[in-house]
Length: 601
Image (cartoon, rainbow, N blue to C red; front, side, top):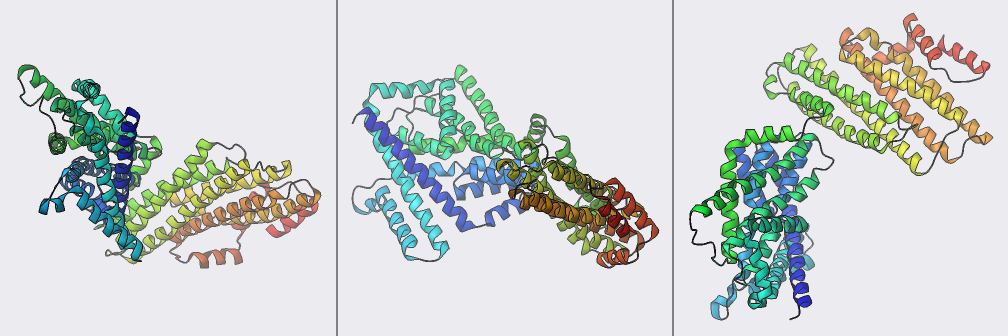
């Protein structure tokens, strides 16, 4: 067999192995459905539970990376704390070694009689046939997923046989043996393990390849040990990639995976090689078999977690130092931590904590509206991404607060407290909607940039006026809510009415500009979409202000109260309306000015 043919045969085996493992893992995850994720989320309140669950889940789905990516997602969403995630990551490091034992089945060989029924060829054939039948002749999705598992297992086994068969003839090749002997150097072995695993994106795959190489008899303990050390570090690559774009805590938990294996390499590498200086270790030159490779991998990972388990808190502090908090994210996390379950027994305190958290949500929504509106005149990918990121944060606020307030509502409360909780549940929805409209404006800005849509000077001037009025109404609604200032909140509704008027006038003006050829037709829809989002932001600010006024006046029907305001406009309302009409006036004709002044009376 030529060198090129051998290399292609090995690569073919690796490709089949990776595909089979991916197909089997995906099938296992689909069969389990969301139960694995729910289990991880609910039963990780102590480090030891986290380790056991991480081990079990990874053993089932055959991928420590998949488990770790799930944990990164939970921590990024604020559903799991970093300390909880550390235990699961530790368990995942143990669970991934189970794959090596499964791969040992591919080396079972029976030439005749009953033994032939246990051969790899027989087992793979049975799995492939049953899997194909389930895929081709059943209609239920669950059976299809089971079929994927069985076919994936068969392909994985065939890939292992392909690799082993390709390298077996090389055991008598002096050049090949000399290459493998180079792994005896600890530094080279570790680097090979890191690079190879980073390329394959799977520790299990790297262990499988090492097991295949071991059939040549040229892999000794001395060369296998450093490779195993490096494999753990290289396996951190897909987890670190999954943390790109996540929160600070998401990045921290991804870093835990790397730190675990890095510390394991340092601890046990140092111990082993220092001891070998003073003591003659008899098994250094012992040829490794697939079973011994699997055993070495498992023992190393278990010993690493045993050594590191007492240091969960120091590891948490280490990643906190390595990945520092950003001020905004630190504030948001602090807001979520206000919603402590132990406060539920004291409704007054739980409601107060909820109000503080909603204040944080209000700040985030206000900043996101301002950030989004600035994109119209000065688009920036960085600010666009931040708008998207903060919208996700607002969704988390609504989820956390909604869940917490529903729990508060089930406790013993007086009438005033019940109405406060009801008010907060409605208000968080309005703050979340501010974020939605900020996102809409951001996407409109992005669309304008991609399609090279520009407005005329007059249109931009009108948008600037509406933008300024919108930012002011958000500021008044947020600040009045935060300090329960009902008097200040009464300024919102007259401004909302004025914003509605200038938005209508601006639409009419834009139609005239289109007719006169000052603006292109393609700008019409975009302009109207922007105006509509500004109007909706003002409407949600009106709801927020009404909730603030309700709380002060013990008036708990927002729509009824707003209706009363519109039909019984007092002098204060009229004065505020007139003030805003002068402050946020569009450039227009004298006749239009007279009409607007008449409307304000």
